[in-house]
Amino acid sequence: MIQEIFSFLESINDFIWGHIAFIFIIGLGGYFSIRSRFFQIHRFPSIFGSFIHFFKSSSTPSNTRGIHPLKAFFAAIGGCIGIGNIVGICTAVQIGGPGALFWTWVGGLAGMLLQYAEVFLGMRYRIKNSEGSYDGGPMYFLPIAFKGKWVASVVSFLLCIYGVEIFMFNVITNSISVNWGLNPYWVAFILLVAVILVALGGIKRVGEVCSAIIPLFIALYLGMGIWVLIKQFSEIPAALSLIFQGAFSPQAATGGFVGSTVMLTISMGLSRGAYSGDIGVGYMSVVHAESNTSHVKRQSALTIIGVFLDTFVICTMSILLVLLSNHWKSGIDVSLMVQEALGVHFPFMQFFMPFFLFLLGYTTILTYFVVGIKCAKFIAPRWGPLIYYLYAIVSLPLFAFVNPSEAFLIMSLAGAALLILNLSGIFLLRKEIEFGLD
Image (tube, rainbow, N blue to C red; front, top):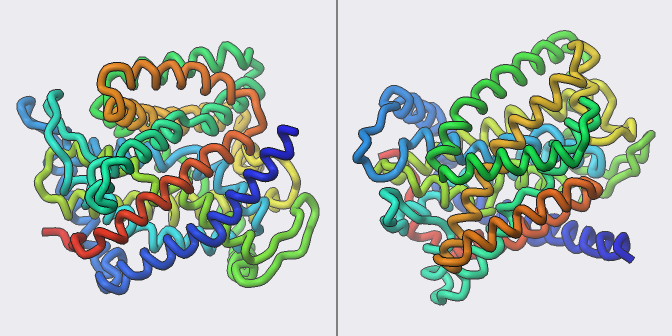
């Protein structure tokens, strides 16, 4: 009975991501690309220069409202650069075939400007709060788009559901307990305590943690990945051929790979890519709204760098690793694909990768969690945070011991609902969005 329910939900999820989300992401992202003359491409060097400028002015006076722009940036990408880049994205290729990566790229290119628009509106309609910072996000700009306050409560509730990251909690618990031989109940308990303790410090504390962890992860992961690509350089053209051929034609079943239609390939590529990069979810605008900068366009443009790192660098590296090692069709668990691919060239990956996944998943869980707290407080200032904490304390350990695909499905459905609401609102407010760096 339960399996039938999840199969039904999976079919709904595939339909939404393969049809509705496809229209939203490609249509609205394409519209913004044409209107801005592909701002995300031709202004990328200037955007990167703006990122460096923020680095040079990394100190923030103690009496300044909000947090430093880079702290907001790292807190935001702490939510999107994580286990989704290593495990979640591999499910796209395992189910949809290598061609799914192409549609992840397409979604990422369009998603750059969708995230820009989301953050732009979040900062434009943000308000000052009593904690010396700002509150912003879809709960503030969607009521203007839909001309009704009801949507603020709906999107806040969905972000509360999305804020309790059951999929990544599941992957971390299983990875550490299996690889290190630890009691999974103790792993889940310690991880839950670690999340709650840091989350109490808000987005500022999360930004500090992510600023330390994310650059280290990017350097280590890309260093190892590039080494593997150099060692197997002659096989890269064949892998790229699989990607481009599979994007537009059904792929035959091979080994553990069950075969794929083009629509399923598109669905897997867009849904896993959107989940990994958090395209259209809305949490990005909540985090970036706390930036102390008055340069709305510059802060919004930082999201383009985040999507570039997430989709075109890290997700691409993960997929190339599993394609070159042929683990995408081996039938092994997706949580082990990248680990096994790297393990051919590096020793002790069974010890290193769980630690890797812990750091990445921890930053993602933290970011989502503090956004969920803000949304719960928005719904019910007095009791909302307490109810949210109770929900998290029950849900995270509960979903730590189910099939990872079932946990991912819950997150994917919540993300799909958020994407439809947020991108509909962005479409209605599209004339208010300005692209630039001034």
